[in-house]
Length: 472
Ligand SMILES: [Zn+2]
Image (tube, rainbow, N blue to C red; front, side, top):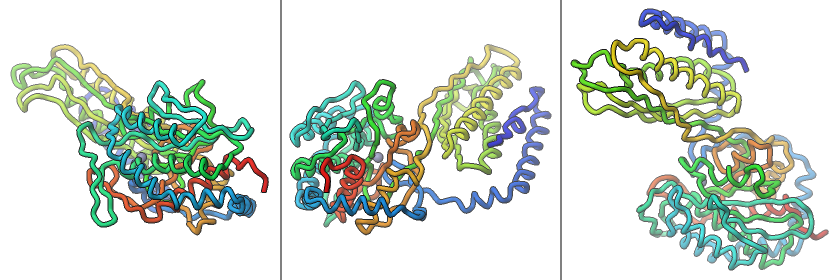
């Protein structure tokens, strides 16, 4: 798409008045843009409302368009196999075991960058259930291989080991009625236990798949983890994975097949610092930061008025020591997100130009002392992309859901699947069953309502993709 970033960014460097003139032009530009692109604004208003579910931002349900009857037939053939029938029964019969796993794993803390303890136990559990091999990779991901009967395809199913909660958080599970309260119980300990449940029923039903299966617990899905586990897993020269299923959080209707990309920065401006009266004239990092935010906001506002949904946010600002001191440092943390990789790149560029220009101008403006220095640290980089709704993998997941009487809701999210999706590898994120809310808060809760149904759905989606290794 066309991005008219130059219109609002190329401001003159000759001081305050040209700034005002430019700001006025930007304002006029915005007004004109509003008028000219009223259709775009209408689209903006019609956009799906997004909301938080678990660790992911998922779009509200969209309607699912016409579906190929072949996929329904494929699912019907799958559920007619005695071993599949048995595995589906076993999901219910072993539900108490699944719940016991949920309680045990929830009570093993897994703060960001410290998932080892939970990872070790998860590895033991996989080995106890029985796999061909299992290991922890150098990043901390726990991986178990269950060999198929003969194709070189590999299907991976994963939950994430990490929670958002810091070291020292009380992770004891408390029960009130049928509700279980504990930080991280749904996001994503439920996903991990769903992964274990899948392996358990496949083994007990002696159900062979055609493709090799990988059962995975990933590290670093949340916030500052920045998908580090997935980035490692899908690195060049990493293990072969043809299809990826992320089980994240609770519920049994969602199918996230689009990744919401984001860039996050911490910007620090440093200067000599000094007395507000005595050292007046030194460059001021706080002033430079303010100018940077203004430039960025004006330009970014203009380019987010139309086209694929894109957002930006200066989330934290800090620095300085007292009201009568020129700060020696000022910093901010900024988050940008977009449905489109191009728009994410564009808004990132606008951001960097705004910050550099502001610091340069503050240095030009200074009357005394050393120049300001600028540090821009990329603290988050999640790629975006999407797997088309018409892709067989997504269609299979839709057909499986409908077979189980579930009307699926397709959407976009920021999950482990972002990485394979951005590389064009079929990947979706689904819920691990049950009901829950309050993810990322100490009041997080889980109810085992339709919990087995969610795992049965995951099982059929996995089998539809991996093949059953037997002919009906
Ligand atoms: Zn999560």
